[in-house]
Image (tube, rainbow, N blue to C red):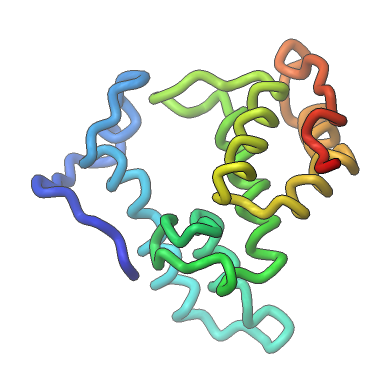
Length: 164
């Protein structure tokens, strides 16, 4: 695990963590949010998964990694990330961007979430091929129709996000 720990780490409980004002995350707040990965790794690696599920701990702990090696908790480079891990990263980011249950930010419309993901492709944070599959096959739309309010949906011009 290769995470930067803020100078003044605190533990004031989950109620405090959930009462963080919108748009006011400090370095300590960000660490507290990201710290769940450490617990995930420890918990899942202690479980006796059968062979067909042996990758679950790794998949569950790499969805915050980036192709540039700037993610967390391990700062893995892109070549160390499998296709399932790359797909999970995109799904996790999309869900986080469109979620309405985060006290520190408002849910983004689907079109804005897709535009942000596309910028992340251009910045080499997420995999282009996996992103294009997500957009072209309208995976985002299936998710949005099932889990998001209709007003958040809007129109997405898919063609502008596909490589030419």
